[in-house]
Image 1: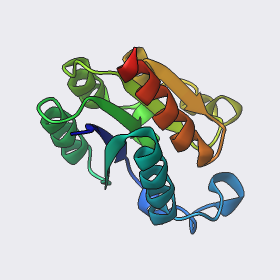
Image 2: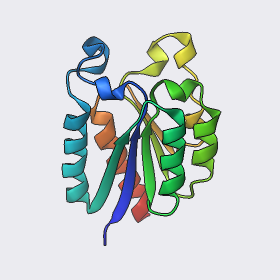
Image 3: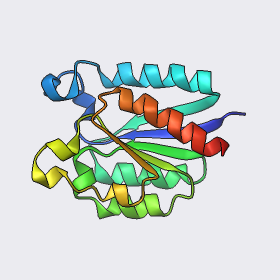
Image 4: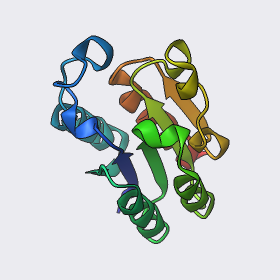
Length: 146
């Protein structure tokens, strides 16, 4: 059976394609999930894609991934800059973690320059648009094969 990768998206990513398309583009989260699923099939892995606007739900899913997933790809959205709870949950996960940001957080407001999640991430992809999810999937698959 192929390895499972958990793909987590945080707050407001359900509005992808509608919210600030000049920053985040016009693709929806469903569009992204479909592209990731197609690539996952090519790479011989499975992806479980989830989104929540609630910090505790994201923490619960990270904890659940401990027993079921080989790796986590996470776009924590604004929780990147504020959630020690998500960092703590990721620190309890043994597999690789890749952090994705659609925009380049380092070119934006100063408060977005720091990410708690980056302290745990095995890689960070920022500013590559929604293609960053595909890059993250390729990288996490590579880490799992190593």
